[in-house]
Length: 195
Image 1 (tube, helix red, strand yellow):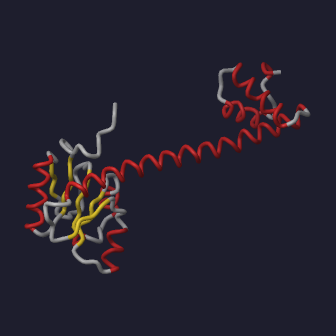
Image 2 (tube, helix red, strand yellow):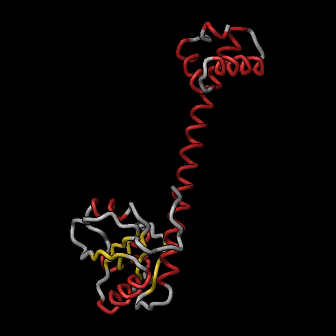
Image 3 (spheres, one colour):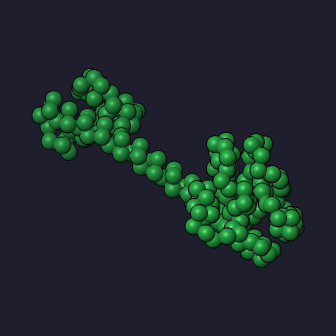
């Protein structure tokens, strides 16, 4: 299944927390045009939905509970800025917003803020996945290196020959090099079949 385009917003759900009724009306009107379902949040302790995006007025900050912060952290956040004081910006930055809008709101800019928020969120998630994969590869490299050193010492082989022996044994046993390397380091030697 392909991921939804950042430009296609129809059918998405937004959690909206806006204090000013004029700004809220502009957001509702624009979201209806874009086909976005709206859930209004009054800043209470519970957030009863899993939104695709959150628009939060900086007047709701700081968030009181850890549960609120965790709920907002699951979707991209668009901050609505009323003042640009360092203390207010610090509270907004604590949310790690994907985009922002300046109050008083106008209808222009809302679509761009949404697209930027979805695209930034997608790119951030991709980068997090890449980092996790690289960290896993780094951990597995240590295991492979330990296994190569073990085989070099046990069989009096040079590094390329020891690695080739491990690779051949992994292929024969239909295992990854990392899996076989973990077995070698745990057992202290190559499995007999590779001999």
